Image (cartoon, rainbow, N blue to C red; front, top):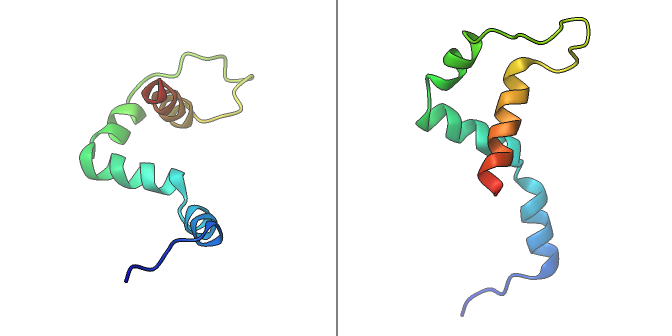
Length: 68
């Protein structure tokens, strides 16, 4: 007999998995040169206004595009 997954168990499973860590694992496994390629790009933003690392901005924008 299968064990039924309760809502509580489902919430615990969802909270146990960190989606960002999972995405990074996928990127490192399937696109190992991607981070090196991003590091070699030139950041043309005005550095006095920069709050976030260029790599973070590119990866987040890529994740956003993949949702649509």
